[in-house]
Amino acid sequence: MTLDLTADPVALTAALVDIPSVSRSEAAIADAVEQALRTQTTGFEVVRRGNTVLARTSRGLPSRVVLAGHLDTVPIADNVPSRHAAGILHGCGTVDMKSGDAVFLHLAATIAEPAHDLTMVFYDCEEIAAEFNGLGRIERELPDWLRGDVAILGEPSDGW
Image 1: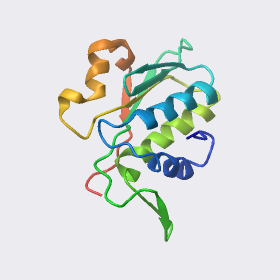
Image 2: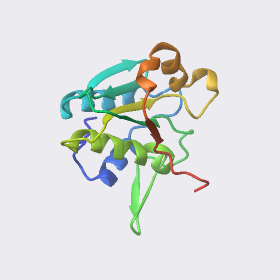
Image 3: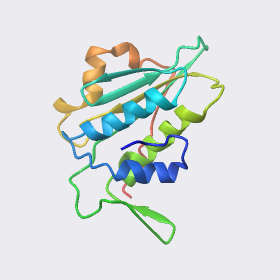
Image 4: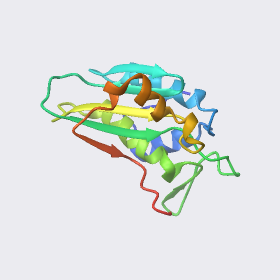
């Protein structure tokens, strides 16, 4: 599947939801995210480790913002594909956490002159045991990719 990073973030969220990505089965969504970042953004270095995809700018700006989100979901329960009803997008991962990922991906493709250097981390296996977590793997293997002045995790769940 080809993602359109310049699409409306709600449409991009739906496209991400429509790619099943249960923990330990994130290859298809990681492929789509990696391909989109490589072909639809400028000024980003893109690296992949397993099913974790990272992208960062190196413009020499005085500060760095790290934007992070996981790609995996809990097991699908008759909630894929996504659907719109009464102005609400429904589907596996819409809140936790593909809407946050969509906003970050949209930003990567549309921001012209960022005020800060950016690092984006789209990691696998967040929904299961920590030993499998892609963020931990990046912390061990590529710690420089997690350095920043501020970090934002785009997961607004809070029980919703």
